[in-house]
Length: 387
Image (spheres, one colour):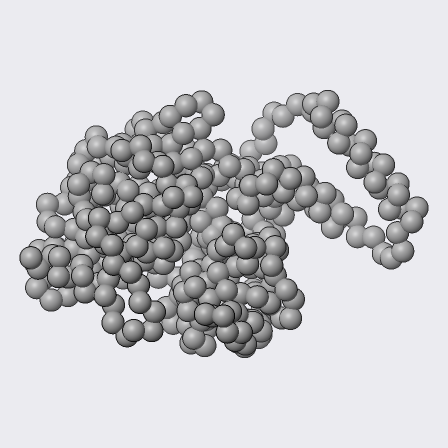
């Protein structure tokens, strides 16, 4: 597949649980702003009849006001939720706009990456640097129990995000669980600008690049900072993907393109029509030792990049087994009522190893020790490169 076609297919977004709160929610091949030519089936007509019957009972017996728009949205959301896939969901126009704003990295919120866990709660993956969430002490692994007094267990992630978002300089009250302890946090919302890539030079000419998320500008930022480190005499490189919940597919693949030799496989996707292989096009590669830091919160696009570098012998993975978000979604507009994010495929590493629900095991396992004050994973990476 050539690079232009790849960008068209994978492009604009691949979300892994990111909202303006901020939360990557899904892994999306692309956002397609057109309407498919879908024919009405007998199953749809049967559904219409059932909904009409339920509506008659509501009109006859329900005591209270009826919000027609909420009824319609609830019916569509419930229909999609019936698939039992937490990443296939209906988006209202407002939710779609929120998602797009989050991907652009410019929004009002508290500044956290978060994702749902299997118990139905929402877990903080990491606070954004210099955000209100970081300032009040939210940490990776914190479980959000309530938002402004409302229990959020089982609540759609987008709805949780919308409750956390709000007007600038207003306050949101969270109750979180940390190591079994309930903790209350009052956080003032403000404008959040996400810097997705940062870098520096460590001891012994070891370059360090942290990718906090894969936004629309991340690949350009990575290339710029990589070139700057090379100009400073970098002799080895650490790429830090810890607590990175994902982002745009294009960014992950474009960064891989800078590091992997031409025509090497970057990713394999399996969809209803079979397998599709994405290969490196640029011909660039890096000829210095590379370590990729990963942890249990490295998800989706992070796993795409980590797998591409590991399987092509570009770098060594150090840290913990990654999250295991290997399903991919496409977002398609549905007339004027909103959009649907629907699971369409699963991605694998270049060697064909599955990622979904299993993650990627690092070459060197180093567990994260919370509150130790020592970054054992980073120290192990430095030690490895200084051999």
